[in-house]
Image 1 (cartoon, helix red, strand yellow):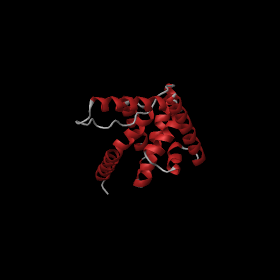
Image 2: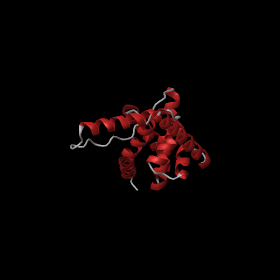
Image 3: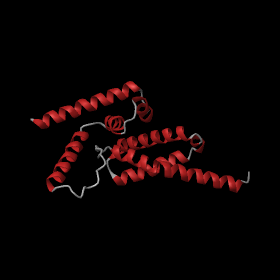
Image 4: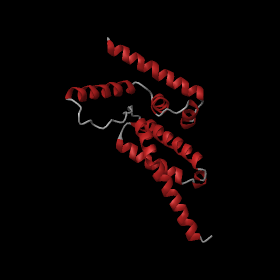
Length: 173
């Protein structure tokens, strides 16, 4: 095959790979780091890392899993390096045009309540909880993305739920 044609096909495959996974990877990273600009930078970093190893991109299903793992590790490494204690924001629902001021205030208070509770979790607990309970991934998949055992994932999730439950109980008092 002509080298220029093969290079063009490779570029087309890379572009398709990025466009198919960009939003999902950004959301995944954003939920871990909780900051839009950091998530944008880290998303770009994750794709750069992935595209440097084109041999890993040949099997689309494996490539998607591999990219998710790179994204999670990139976000966790960033949190470790920066020493920041952050929280994950749950994507805000679009504003309803029929929402009353009272409903908007209640939704805002609920969001703040969740943010405060998520601040209590370690980055790995937060990542495990978000991937399992928000993304709905099975424990095996969460373990692969976090690079740990299924038992460790269960431990992170159990610890996160206990911390959050205590937070809720303390808020009621």
